[in-house]
Image 1 (cartoon, rainbow, N blue to C red):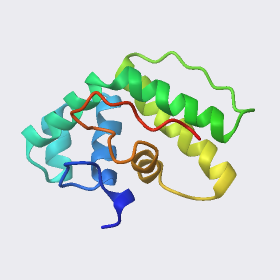
Image 2: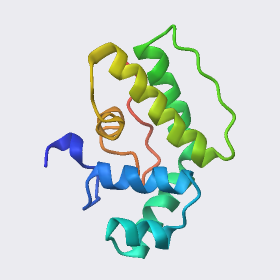
Image 3: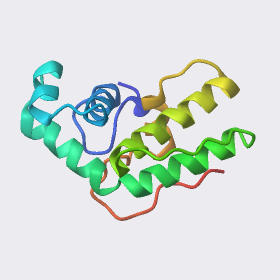
Length: 130
């Protein structure tokens, strides 16, 4: 694995974790997601809980990055929850990055733009757009 494929202190790759986050945003429960991904339910539940705790900060961080990468991009959304809005913000930043740099996974981008700390158990801020 490359550094951008992983998140701090997580055994599974960011693509697998990202798939779980998208499935949760689409309304699936942690047991169903775990079964689909072939992972232990408690592991998936931990990812979802950690993301939910940081959802507002994640949404804000990726909204700033979307603007930094594409200032003319003006997308505002009102989702059903902070969790959904945070997943959406990662996707929007991914779309803006693709327009600017070419094809790339939004989850690999998420790992890079958070220095691997997307699901970190720390209160330190994400690295700012620069």
